[in-house]
Image 1 (cartoon, rainbow, N blue to C red):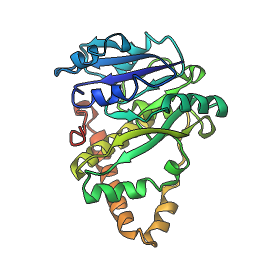
Image 2 (tube, rainbow, N blue to C red; image 1 turned 90 degrees about the horizontal axis):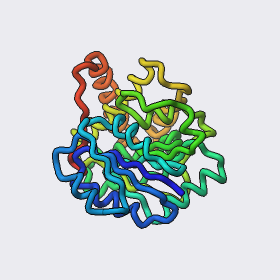
Image 3 (cartoon, rainbow, N blue to C red; image 1 turned 120 degrees about the vertical axis):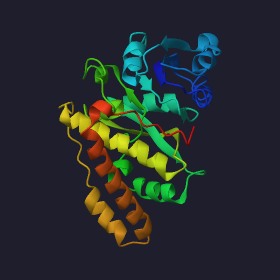
Image 4 (cartoon, helix red, strand yellow; image 1 turned 90 degrees about the vertical axis):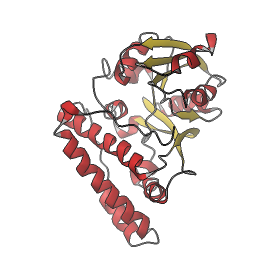
Amino acid sequence: MATIIIPAHNESTVIRRCLDSVVNQQGVHQIIVACNGCTDNTVSIVQAYGDQVTCLELSKPSKVFALNEAEKLILSWPVFYIDADTELLDGCIERVVQGMDERQLLLAAPEPEIRLDESSWLVKQYYKIWYQLPYIKSGLVGTCSFVLARNGRERFDRFPDIISDDGFVRAQFEDHERGNVPGSGIIIQAPRNLKSLIKIKTRSQLGMMELRAKGLMRFQEQKSYPNSLSSHLFSKNWLATSVYIALALFMKLRARFQSTRMNAYQWETDHSSR
């Protein structure tokens, strides 16, 4: 039976959708929502679910702090670490647990379903290529939510004070130890506009730079992007590929600039999809 941990900081606009997608799933033993530093009504929304959900009310606005505090309450494994702005498809929990057992995965994730209905043209072009990258197609997690087996969680002590908790976890495992589980699914709302896309992808890049700088990557990820992108440039997807390359380069440069000013860094959030 699985445990679900959902860190939530001012997520009143999305937390109901997230909780509604998990409270009736089969195979769930406990749901813990770690409300951290909330100044909206996230806490009251979570508490309205009564005994179905354990609500942690933490004053410190920190995702990794919330994860560490929530982990003190874990009663069963595996543990699903789910972002509050996502939704699990029906049957997701059981399929992921079964898939982890069958493939002996230590780290897993549902297959991402990116919703682009309300996104701008540039955002749609970016994700059109993102979906086709070998790293994503091979099923090596690729979402901000993840699932850890008990022996997988033994790879590290506490979540360190970093930007990218999912990047940190992913870097503790080799490719054959992790993967997405076919037949499961997690809905992720894509940013609606370019500004928001740049924010979250820059944060992702910056998070990986931080992990490398702090020596927190047990295993280095091998991503063969150049060969894949060059082939797309000479295909019918040349325009989308050009958009992707230009945006990816800009985000990387922006992340490098921010990495020189980490002491002044402020968490960038996509408010457009909330």
